[in-house]
Image 1: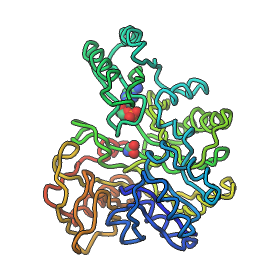
Image 2: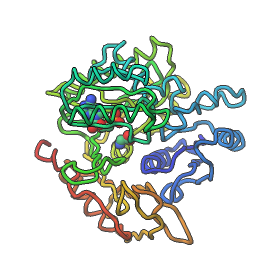
Image 3: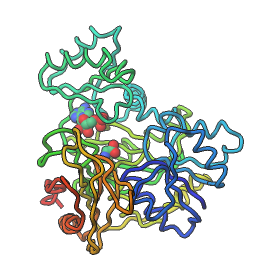
Image 4: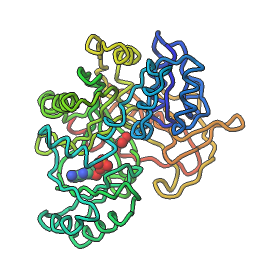
Length: 426
Ligand code: AMP
Ligand code: GLY
């Protein structure tokens, strides 16, 4: 099988690492990739926005499966584009068409979808400039904190949480007046849910699904979950509080109604669904859907997937997902993200990264890196994600922190408390 993987982050290095272990793999290309994917696959200098050039490359190299890492190409219709070209409609795209990607691409759509299918989520109202006054009145009916969400994709920055009502009203007006461009033409106002978040993943052909390992991501830059939001500073899997009883609720109240709901609405979905959940007094609620895997969650869930991932992708290609097995490694995995100093605000790129030879059996996944003049240099805010296994969460974390001692670059920063909140509970 010849595969093209789109994207350039830690998620994509983890996917490339997993795909490259398959005995069915003939050749793996990654576009545009990073220095990590370059060491195990062939990087191709193509923009993930340039569907025409991607299509030409797929034809030229006789690629069978295109795995889409990030949400952008999916929300912008890469799957629909391939389907519309006769020579390419036999290529399997791992990732939904535009309509299915709306689960992530439109908060308004996803909230309405959950309402239609009685999927537990925070109560909400959806407003635009014409209904601004109604939105302000709706805010008054809630008690703080107030959750405001831009309807469309806003590079992970479209959610604002304000404690104070008058500040929330101001923020709401600012959003509707174009703070996030067209993405905030519609704004969803939500009830605040208080609990612990976790991420649950499935792969689905739109009818059948397989549950992948769950994970918890640490989003804030500072220790004890303080400071600005980031793309994710670390992750652990499994999640100690996601026991059998809880995961049964997730499956029955959320996963099954979601997959059935898509089918009922004739949204033919093929790819991953990432359920961003919050556990409130032992019950799961959906905070958001994503139409792709998470980052850095991929860096812990893919190492725990023992099955051949190309078997699962082939299941999507041949409508045989139900016959495929998902075997999960019982060990814990943890990952710690090494970021550029200053991130998530302004930071420098181009710092040389050095690796000592001994990585203690850990896995070093590259995120924002690139090759230059025989060196590996930083090329983003999140630079390297260091994953390790352990017989329990505590050991996995110890191994991740030991391994990361072998990586260094100028102004490197990382959180020292990943997973700490859950250790006593594991
Ligand atoms: P999202 O982009 O939808 O994942 O939201 C970003 C973050 O905002 C989530 O990871 C939560 O921490 C928080 N958040 C979103 N919606 C709510 C809510 N209804 N209640 C509490 N926290 C929320
Ligand atoms: N780690 C959160 C995300 O990938 O959206």
